[in-house]
Image (cartoon, rainbow, N blue to C red; front, side):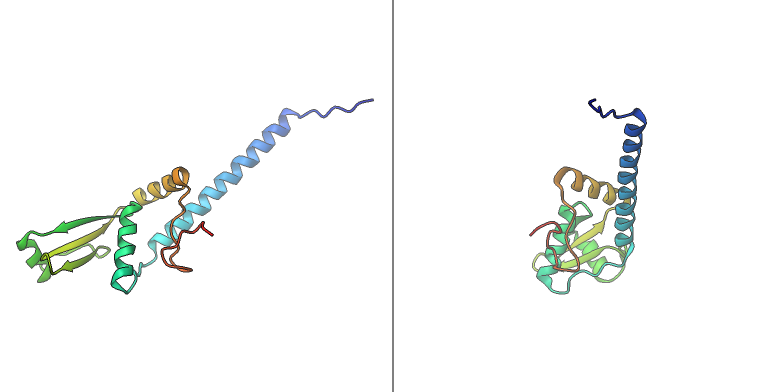
Length: 140
């Protein structure tokens, strides 16, 4: 007598539900991880070259925008502290051009959507901030 393995519809449903739960829990954990890391205070690198790389990467990944302010009136207002910049912004004075390069963060909801897009489209999970600075997380 040959035994036939029959997959019941209840077993298929059970497997699909469990698989859906795995992805839901994974999405929740990754989202909470992203949120907790983003609300933690940021400490950019201390050397000029590392700081330039850090902010350029933040712009490239879609987490910050950069603008150059070269209007002499506004440059003087920034220099004299008359213009209030966002406390999460970072600016650098470029004396050779008498201008400020201003890096401003993008709202966290848009950062999250870009982070998810980077994972899904490019399999880019971001860069390490603790093990090796600016080193891709999923590399050898």
